[in-house]
Image (cartoon, rainbow, N blue to C red; front, side, top):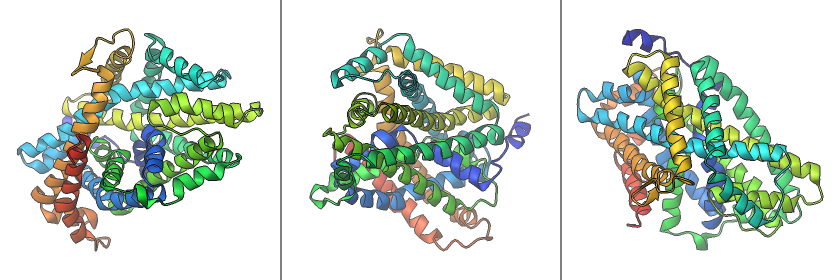
Length: 456
């Protein structure tokens, strides 16, 4: 029975589907609320240059590790590592990826639900007021015991609808619609932002190199951003790669996905900074940027242009919802494929179990920000703890172990065969890749881990 499930698990139908689905899994809210801010605070174009170097040195090599493992096994993340581990404890690395995805989607669904609330508020033309008004609005909403849970459940429902339709008819078709729409909305918003008086100050803030702000901390920030932005060690890349066809060029796909992800992040900066600078507002990071600062920026920047203000606000929160939804789909798929194959469940039943668990954990996370604030772990709200634990422990640990596993344990013939598609394409970079995953990537991942705890 397990064999039948594995054989009928499906594949992406087209190369475009592979790129858009996997890039959609990587592109998320972090591209919008973290990358622009970190870029501006760390030297603008100087940071972007360092970030691109980090993507090349670490992001793409680790992405390739997950791609090779997933496509080789044609199985869920846990089983994929187990097949190569040959009964050794290395198989646990795959389970870390599955656990990480399950924990992330528990609280990420809550934030995704917040974007829906603001889509409705924008559509109803209710996003008007002072900065204090927006701050109070977000505080009251996020602490509400009912509304955030409803929106979170709706996001899970939308994700579930895509997942139960399978790889080609669900994930691939949804990605082919959502990713182009995301780019169109992003380009429209960038155009609106650049049209504002004083917008050039924001462009300079983002792209003018300021090497006086560059330090060792800048390099570590760029490493961390590359690590998280590309969805490394969440099980998503390995799971999606298990649906790649055997003739997929893994290196080319990794470069294209990393390029799309970086492009979205830079465009987000072009959307945010010119508008913020035009009204003299310094953008911050995290939920406060998305739900408090930017509604105020849009209100001020397009004052007197009610129709433009309405369209920009609605388009922006629709953009956020799409970015959140594509990430939720990839995270959900990690757990769904795991339950389906390891517990011999049909896809629909596995998806229902995952969706129910997401709603339960999501509800607890949401309530921990309001009425159930006493629900704490290590003196953090459940929401805050899951965010901290996955970002600071699970992701660096999973990435580090994946590098050691591929670089030091797996036969290098396996690496050559996967990167060259069994000798059918040229792969002159194999030697450089092996050096990267044996030495460079583990060291960089370790530095990220230590930096997060203030040890370097």
